[in-house]
Length: 610
Picture 1 (cartoon, one colour):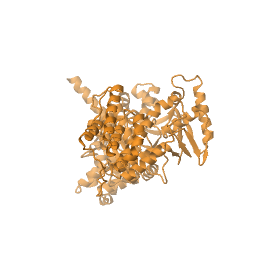
Picture 2 (cartoon, rainbow, N blue to C red; picture 1 turned 60 degrees about the vertical axis):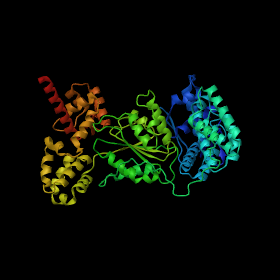
Picture 3 (tube, rainbow, N blue to C red; picture 1 turned 90 degrees about the vertical axis):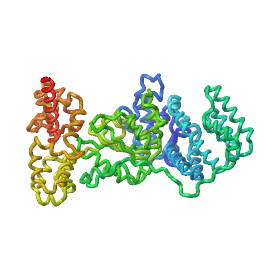
Picture 4 (cartoon, rainbow, N blue to C red; picture 1 turned 90 degrees about the horizontal axis):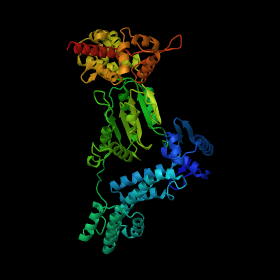
């Protein structure tokens, strides 16, 4: 299946052109294709079909257009209803916009690397994909929304292709083309400077100067500005005779290339288990065969704090790094104390890695700074095969600013929360490790000999860590750092709930701090309920039982419990005989909640005493 947007909107099945009738059907297809696998809401479709005056039957009409498209496009195209709108995916389909962006990206890279022949040819191929004005048969509302962006991209590609041709000494053949372009785009200074350069190199200095003066007049009359530095510099070079009559030859020695950014930390050397999750994530990020240009690769790893989400994400990122030649980006989305980072702060760091200069970015106090950073980020990531690892996301709103606009880049997200509103995402839920994997991880860190010599103590340690890799790592490091102490000593201390979190702390690894931070990040109502329910017996409970304990209604209690489940701080423990869900805390989360509650009680006593 082939789709074309760079001209009249068309769909082809091999050599057969699919007959689409009417601007509305063409518009719906174009909107869904431009979304590149994301869900397009009914409201957005309505806005691009009818503007501010939708008919009363707009939902029915949209449904009719979707049904017609589904019938015409056939089974190769998956066109489905996904709230709040519709989603189109087409495995293996060809979209001219994606091919144009790919060629444009390759051509610009060749230009940066001074491979001018390759640059000129590749950019020319990109421009040949345009069959006329893009989106030529859609509604004016869609054309107004999307055409300026597409035309700007095309003109920029054209300028880069001309730059390559000028460097190759093709100035004579460029004069006619550039004269027409300057007439079409009279205030575009780069094209005017390129025309001046071509004229000068052909010995037509006076005409080059006239082009500058005409441009200065147009800029003053239409925009009220003077020529910019590039156009002025070209003018001064013509006057002084410093503008090279011949292009500089391409570099003949080794070319100094800018290395792609690699921000991802090293993978964990003693990674154990998670074979199924690892295989699934790798398969989705680097599928066998050519990945679909329409299918977004946004993968979410969720689970409780300390369960190993980041370790798995790093292992996967390094395993599939070869699929992402344009770089591996990484950003932590929370501070060390668990507070959420500002999206602008994260974007600035990512943009610097992508080559954006700090002085080009808006000042911190600029009113539209976040919008500017998002635009720069989506421009920088467009058409680039990047893997972006976003670690410890707080919610959908924070992520929205950090998701690239195209499907070339893949995104791997870790979060304690189930982020159901992230479009096109696939969620992998990470549970605590089983007993055998837990023992293997403890042995890998502490040393197999320590485990073999004291198997009973090792079993006690594993049970005390309750399948949490962070806890197992802390316990293993304590054993490895104290080879003269028997493992039984640590096992005895971990068996005491009052001492357990204190023992699971070494260096920067602190299980109590991590779990306490996760609890403190929740709203007050959820934290207070967790403190009340963290009873010493660690048993299960229903919403009704918890409500009695907390003095809340059953409905309110159930709502708070479900939010704690979504935040991976509470587990579902099955259904009771009356069909009601039962809940329980992970043992280490329960101990952290007890510690938090005790700390708050102590603070209240101090306040009262003061």
